[in-house]
Length: 163
Ligand SMILES: CC(C)(COP(=O)(O)OP(=O)(O)OC[C@H]1O[C@@H](n2cnc3c(N)ncnc32)[C@H](O)[C@@H]1OP(=O)(O)O)[C@@H](O)C(=O)NCCC(=O)NCCS
Image (cartoon, rainbow, N blue to C red; front, side):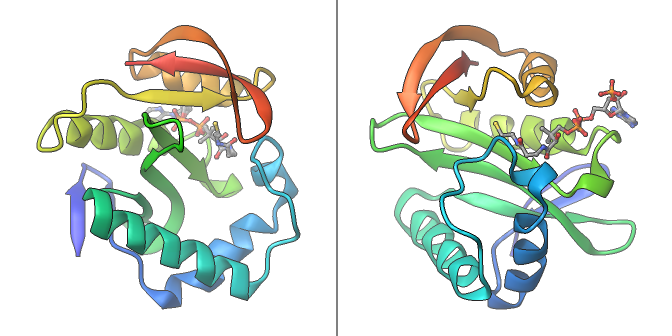
């Protein structure tokens, strides 16, 4: 089911058959460089991650969604919303390397942030970013986020941006 449609992208619910595309991007060290990956990903861990997204969707009415490029129907990344154990919700963006530099992350994240406002009516939205991840910080600023503070999350010190 498509949740969100933008000019060039569709953010939809996960299907188990997405696991191989997810695994492929999770094996790219350039993509995972700033992500809290602890163990080498496998097809099994990719399926388990998809299961967790489906659970969060059931529970919260949102999750991190697969991003499909309309032009060719390919899964080029993931973007969406996730509630942290601390209680607040973050917006997440991760794209395959060959999909960088086209504005897809900003386009998808802008749509996810709009969904957080309406229909979800979340009081605030955050992004947690490794200080060295300048491409991701640029996305936060393009969304109109501002730096909030440094927080401890995912066992790291991360910059927190707020919208
Ligand atoms: C973070 C990440 C999503 C940013 O991707 P990105 O493609 O640089 O970000 P955007 O979608 O905003 O694209 C912006 C770029 O597209 C260019 N662009 C090209 N066509 C465009 C268009 N039609 N519209 C908008 N921008 C366009 C912009 O000029 C900009 O290029 P620049 O960075 O050279 O100035 C990507 O680097 C990534 O997936 N990294 C690995 C995962 C990760 O670290 N995620 C964040 C965890 S906090």
